[in-house]
Image 1 (spheres, rainbow over the protein chains, first blue to last red):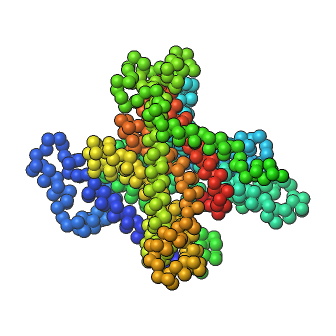
Image 2: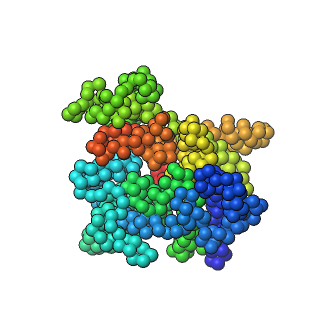
Image 3: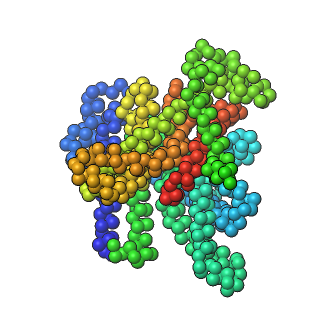
Length: 321
Length: 298
């Protein structure tokens, strides 16, 4: 067990080192950091001074180790565009993204699970057929088109909901939340539905196929034979087991969620980390790109590691390998 | 009986419709310059007098412009045809590049095993844990910082193809590697080794034909994804420039006019994109179920 843990930790550290190396190469070699940072029409002397101040004259390995040290202490450089520390930028945008992602995941689970169960229990009902057909269209519909259509209908034509931004925010010190004002909540509706839709289709399909599998198993048939109430069999016995893989998949889908959040935030001009990232791509603001890569890489490595370790706790067979 | 067995061999109606739609789109794409009423790149062929005309079926529509015109007076049918062309070419290019890379690396990893296999598959593991769009955006940002704006214009399609394929080859490599490992243990491969054929020849002429069918299925399924990724990147402003717009770029441009009530500039190319992807998805699903039940879980 301990050996497995340490091997897994070592792997995670190696991947993180590789990601850091890529981020460093981006920082150092993509574009000219000096040219992007000096004011327009700067003299050669000013440029040289900046080059020295940034430590760009040192040997490359020294620079890399300096970089790793900086990253470990939470210094991810200065944005070319905003002239602010990238860490502060990322942290100030984090609440917006988290609130969006949490609401979207909640919506996807709250709608996707019941629909999946319905499609498994009553595959021939009108609602199931409609749901099945809609999911195929849903998968083929890119996130940004969904967002665009929602804006067109609910913001431009009906004028019910705002199409961009977060509305009024309440400052809780470290965290600016949109949950506590009416305009904040209204602003959340369209982006969170857009982001929820792609997860929803996935969860629905998964719950449906798991439910069908579980329902044909012996213990369910035995429960029916015992004459237990249907609601108890479906709700307590079948659904609980069908939900196990859903939990895992939802966890592993966080990567996809990050990617789709980038698109959703751009469509709705939602001031989160995703929008910061797309703007950085167009600018191009290399320190922000590199820092975002580091952040996302760290997130993914952590999630994968936690999932792997959890598996070994849940499934004893994996411990002996 | 005869008709029944024939019916069984025919794909379901939805697949045939999708095939028809796709065939029509491909004809339109190939012959776009002949079919399109005007050339959107030829400034003399359109004029500002015709700008912002709604689709022909609406009030104020003009029969000359079936889907209406954009803010510069360009016929949307023509603009979309040329946009569709660029989207399809980049989608196909990305799939071909990813398939070629994945097949070669998968063959090598499966054939030689050991350290080579370990290195290739670990790189694949790390890559695949990052979403394609994220990787593609990063590469686009790097390309933008490295190349000048003019170079970016000419290189944009290649940068796009590369940045989409860089993540997508993993799926091919994994499948081909697994099949190759099975084939390597078979008698015909061992016989080929015994008579001293070089590894390249064994992989290319003997193993490859036997793993090709699954590659074709994955390629069809991935085509829809590749077209979507390209559209998303272009929509985000990290893809094709407005001078050579793909469907995604057209939607991005149309997005600016959404609030002026000129919805058709964005919605028409979006509709074409969704129909294209839907058709490819329906066919891809069918092929997957029909030829390779093992690929069911993606």
